[in-house]
Length: 336
Ligand SMILES: [Mn+2]
Picture 1 (tube, rainbow, N blue to C red):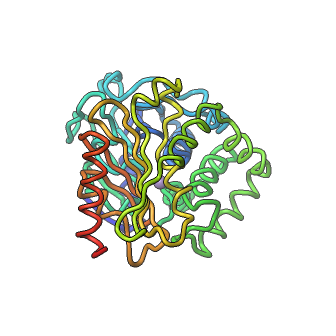
Picture 2: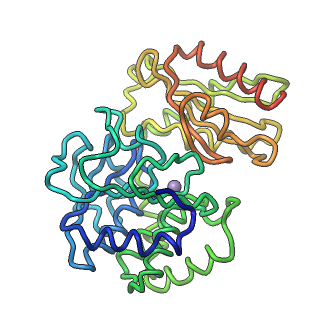
């Protein structure tokens, strides 16, 4: 079952949760505050019903800045392949756009031996679970969780409020990206009334970086090349650079780099490429013109997913080859 209708799906999802004794939730690789906050908010919601809920970190480490979210210290440091599904009767994937986002360490096959629910806002989500609520117009999965909790007549605790707040705040770029509506601001008003320390929460989340992250940004920004009459810009960081500059795995992020690059008006599409290992390129696409240059399609072509304004993929090729493939595809898709 797959639906974009929250009001229709809310009672179905609640009934499934109430049937469970123990619920499993996980974070996607390179977790962001929307997935961690959504999973933790959902955990608090489920626990308020007297049902056990466990959040696992998934493939990647949880960034230090997110450890201040209420409940984060209880995240179990396991990936999906490391849990025994026999211990659970329901799996909820929040903000997880594809099966590959459940885990890349060990292939996961759906349907699982236990019931599964997807709650998401990525338009690329195909609905891989037994029940799928996908609301593409929602600027954050955390906003979907908030509206579900309201539909369920739930009292939103300060812990839930803080986790939903960081999800919405981050996925809307601080309440500024398209998709942010009056409704989002109304929800945020309710959330800050329950979580008055929101400014401290943002500060702790944003100011917990290690110096190697800036080294990485420097390498990436210094590498930018432009193509197709200045309409496409690509930054690259090689695996050799990651090794020699001692950049930790947890510091490797392409999304922040591509977000920095999109500020140049004439660069309609920007891509940040990092060679995680030889022939495995992590790639993040951004655009500053979502109407004419949505990046979802180019990301999907490379087997990834995402939104109109922000998307990502893994390309199995050398850096040079990946760059050529992106230039060729962008030329074709956007008539550049
Ligand atoms: Mn999200």
